[in-house]
Image (cartoon, rainbow, N blue to C red; front, side):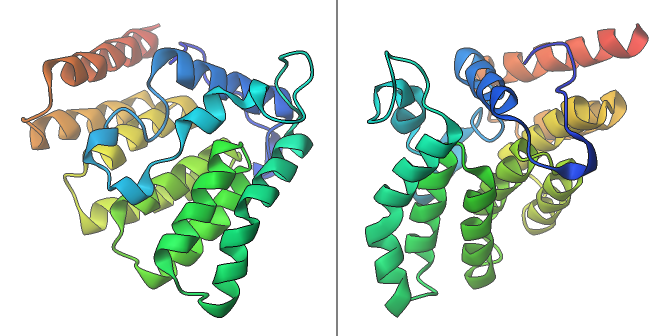
Length: 218
């Protein structure tokens, strides 16, 4: 992630389109998106269709290979989600359908809508840590840093060793709260409680820890 703290709008309001796109670009480039570093530990139902996000410029409505506007992406998401939403009318507590709809909206950067469907899924299955982590990501991208942290703390209540939750908690505390100490504490717990992590993943976390320590000293 970049060394500079991510800029937020005031009052917890949604970020501007350019901020959303910038965040998405950084996440895709570095492979350290909130909720993605430890994707292998998530359930298949929690996975967001990355192809939709990475190839957004080729979607209908994209002009000259340019990224479509958020309004255009919202229209795309609504169209793709329509059949699932129709099924939900007769089965409103279908957890899988709710998650699928949330995934569609998250992939098209409609984070507020995605969080709403993940929240409904969690009302059905509150102990689904993977989906709660996805919801926290959406809240964070939508500018609700405190809400994201609260969701991750709930995830850790259910699973204190969850790698995604600990990693994301560190990222959000560092980038969203400029809380280097809090971030380091989360990442230290991550490494301590997950000795099975691959060498690459450990190295990625250790690199972030070093950056947070360096920034803290400066």
